[in-house]
Image (cartoon, rainbow, N blue to C red):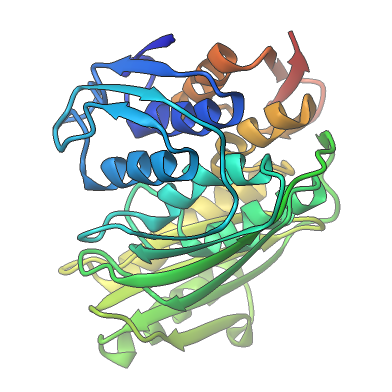
Length: 341
């Protein structure tokens, strides 16, 4: 059994989710203690418990400590069984985080699978559906990992209730190589709304067009059916084979202009950095690179989230991540390379 300290690094739910993914992939059990000790309210929340339950269902695992608020979990996996699965995350927990937990195991399975998820599609502090669709999925497909996503119903915080379907097939892994950025990214945006006044999206579009110097027709306003009200501003920086996605969520009492400025600030930082992999995607690509047995990309300064993920992966797989600063160009960038240990 691999023993893990849930307070390591950034001390959040990623330590648990990556451990679940790799336990299923490798067949190695683990015990994690002090779960989410770095958070204000430590222990398993509903969306973390949903990830544990989903992983256990995929591989008929034996689990101890799968309770709300639990600080310790023991997980002993069995063989992964491909098939058609449905997972519901109560409240507005992120369905996207649960999906990311089970994807690596399904890519390693011996037959295609489908996953239906009910829960949040646009949550604070979690990748949005649009991030997976426009940033993550295109890159992993170039690495030989099939993934097709469909959002049938948006699930905004706090109501949740979104519906997403994922089609997954066994991967034929290829190493990633994204050291050089191609032409500048093509920037376009979509503003998703549900049960809120139309002028909110119009004001957000005005700010985005002014700040990012893009035409009005590059910003689509889409009214989405959803169980509750919500607003998500999604900016896609499209590059060949994938790019980066910036998501800003509307909040009650926060002016629409502030939401749009927050998104524009992040987009301008990414434009200035001019790297092929942004900070959000950098974290998400580590596990696919490890499964592929290697790869390399250029990015901005890695977050603690990224370095923590690399540390957890190294506990399960014979892969070493080399993270190095590169000052050879006009801008200071970082290179992350995965190699077999």
